[in-house]
Length: 114
Image (cartoon, rainbow, N blue to C red):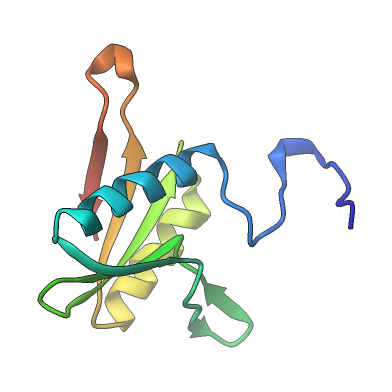
């Protein structure tokens, strides 16, 4: 099946973009190190209100059994910040916003908790 190309980088929702794929590799390394027990891409959708849903990029279970929702962004739009804040207020999970740090600035991941 061929998907139409649209402006602003739209893609199939079950396909990772490059930043999400890089973060997936990071999570796999954390799993191999024993810090993460399980993770899945777009595995959970949370109902925030009538006709308003939020699907975090990664659902992550830590080795102690606690669940986290990780949102991976190259940059933030206001609507995405609102959704993650509403989700953090409504659900008993830890919500993390993850942004990739460029290699020229040291690389790695900047993490913001909501």
